[in-house]
Image 1 (tube, helix red, strand yellow):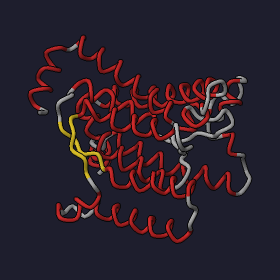
Image 2 (cartoon, rainbow, N blue to C red; image 1 turned 180 degrees about the horizontal axis):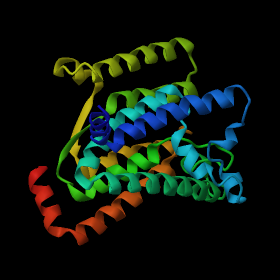
Image 3 (cartoon, rainbow, N blue to C red; image 1 turned 30 degrees about the vertical axis):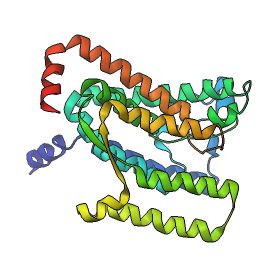
Amino acid sequence: MPALVRSLFKNIGVTFWLILLNTVLFFVFSGLIGFDVIDIGMIEAHPATLLGGERLWTFVTSMFMHQSFFHLFVNMFTLFFLGAFCERVIGKRRFLSLYFISGVVAVAFFVLGAAFGQYVPRGEWVFGSIDTYAAGASGALFGLLGVMAVLIPRHTIYLVAGPLFVFIVQVLVDELYPSAFLQFVLNIILFAMLFAMFSFTARWQKYALPLALPLMWAPVVAIVPLVVLSFFFPLPIGNTAHFGGLVVGLVYGLILRLRYPRKIALLGKFFR
């Protein structure tokens, strides 16, 4: 029996453990903050504090905290599919290293972007405020997306655009025409789209507005529209963190391409 248990755990991917760790720490951190055991600055990344050389551990802890359960759900849903795929392509060790490095660099980009944003018009909207707390696995996820975009650029994936679109509409409604009723309606639409995503039936999944596109274009579609909108409305999204994680993934993807040209060529033929 012990051998069977060891074999079972050995076959579980790193992606599963990361999802479990993110989920457990979200509830642990939320409980500690909610009961005033610690303050939010002990967990989430605060640019002003980090620029002062304090609480440097939040470069890591902020990767495992999320602003809400919905934020956690969206990121873990993405990690479940993108992470499992990336892990099979580059291997467990490379995958885990890429995940952590991308996440830490993403926080660094956010901190530096927030510092820069103080001196340009609407900089706090586009780059984030120096007093904003940042958390989430998005930077690490963009690292995974970046490496896959370089290794198998022509492979078609589906971005579930519906929930993201509804989320953006919610932000715009809250800015332009605050209405509890409209927010309630949008929440119903949002949860309906989430249900459609998990229906595993093509008839229903189409209502989540899946967007098919080559991997090479996925980072552009995922980042550029939000950056453009940030010039007009303050979105609760870390554009610079996403970009930082993406840079790490793109660079690592190029390194792998140069180091293993034959294997990458085979990948390109297999994943069309």
